[in-house]
Length: 432
Image (tube, rainbow, N blue to C red; front, side, top):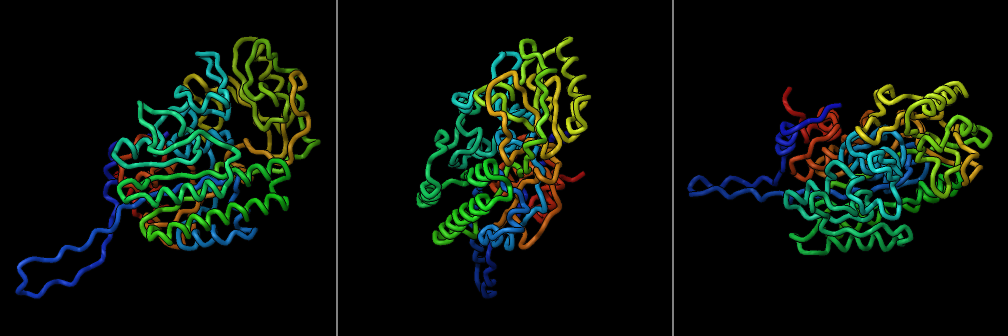
């Protein structure tokens, strides 16, 4: 883990603001004419759930391709583990791995309190959301922010909230979302958000229920691409495009699920003695791409031995023995055991209710698996033109946004050298 501190903040404070040159006055002039300052930079973060970079490469997406052409596109962005939505959109917001931001899965279990995250109340409970999201960093340093449905935005951090935020409304029409975000930029300059975000779930939803390469998923990409185009044109018509950094991110990719590749594991897991968040709730019996097991003693050992031997397509790890790139050993919420299936395979239990047939598309697999690759595209004054970068971890995005905003970043797990590379040197790493 590389938690960089004040040196990174100082380095990011040095990003360059360029202005237009003015001719020097005649020799007899008593004073120089100062060059006008460029407008302060802003950030618009657009989250496209479930969008893998291969879909943009392979399918029509003219607005996303146009942004990439005038900015930076990553060959891939690695999600954090597990490669699911809550975990990764919050990692993007905080620059932290799950071991440090606390959301170790979509519905985490907190052993000290015995609570499992409730989707109805959890978004408003500060206990679940550790770390400092970028909008809180900005607000603490005097910059207004406006959030449209980003995970973690519904709670205060040390009493600080975004200037504008609303509880998540899954059925809010996309056109209304776009119109509302653009209306934020019609405010007087001092009241406009310096950081803003908007979220679309359409690609993820289509890929889950029809498959990652279905016609429905292709249509979903075309739809969200159109809304991205509206946002770009709206900012351009307001004369703001030259000062705003538009950053497109997704939380993860998607894998095709084979219905016959489901492994029954319930016989090894005594749910009267062990807790498995993935095996609770309305769809607890659904096929899972990973499971987190909490408990101790003989029941835990039985689960470990059974999962370890049942199939070569299931990989099980004890706490402290997970692959180095998982970063899931949170001090209290890290699981005692983690079982992860190979892409395309799933685990289920017949001992609880819920679905028994896997949905056609899913994620949550090893975060370095190609099927889980996420999307990163950024265009604006903090990014070079027409550059393709090698893959990098999503925990680096927070520092790029802090740099663009000119704010001192909180501690993160990002790599300053990656941030320097992706921004073409505009956000230099601290001196070694």
